[in-house]
Image 1 (tube, rainbow, N blue to C red):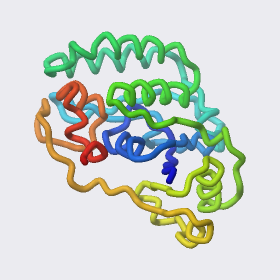
Image 2 (cartoon, rainbow, N blue to C red; image 1 turned 60 degrees about the horizontal axis):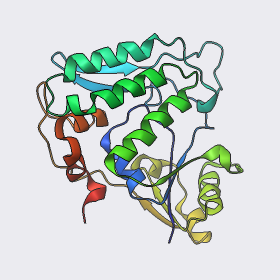
Image 3 (cartoon, rainbow, N blue to C red; image 1 turned 120 degrees about the vertical axis):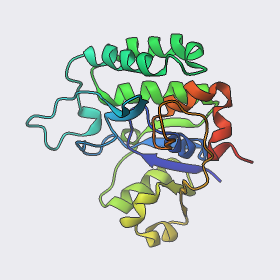
Amino acid sequence: MKKVAILQSDYIPWKGYFDIINKVDEFILYDDMQYTRRDWRNRNQIKTQNGMMWLTIPVETKGKFYQKINETKVSGHRWAQEHWKAICLNYARAPYFKAYEPLFEHLYEEAGKLDYLSEINYLFLSTICMELGIATKLSWSSDYPLSEGKTERLMDLVHDAGGDYYLSGPSAKDYIVDEVFEKAGIELAYMSYEGYPEYPQLHGDFTHTVSILDLLFMTGKEAPKYMLSFRK
């Protein structure tokens, strides 16, 4: 059985995103879909002494109402320095920040040279997967032919990738037509995010929805112990 998941790329997403990646054999970045503003595509949150803080990559959107995610260009390159400065300021006291500092400093230097949001997201996703020990294949939806219809398009992507099991995010229950997958002989399952254990955090009350960077800086190589997909 080959398991496939399909999600739009996010910027330094939370641990649940990486759990979906780790639960499948191929993870398809759905980046030839329309870019949505005020979403997770170009932003995420870190913890600070003053509460949650958004790190947002500025992108060009004026007059580009129907641009795809993989067509979305970054507006300037100073964002990378600013994000790294904010991360250093708020995680300098984290137990494993020094261990990861060279890696992420280099990542932000490289990300600051890139022009497209999808490229930036892929850079962080692929590197963080390696750090977590996730060996799932990352591919692009643009690598495959696309059909019409929300559910049909997803089903065809799974089929073309050679999959017979589709793991979806829970929010897709609102629009996926289960029968389409049943007729194609593809098993459909939905990810559950229940049961995450807490781990030590800086700056106030615990929150699960913060960027994966928080988990890495606070727990280091023990990070998989606090993720659902690594449980036996």
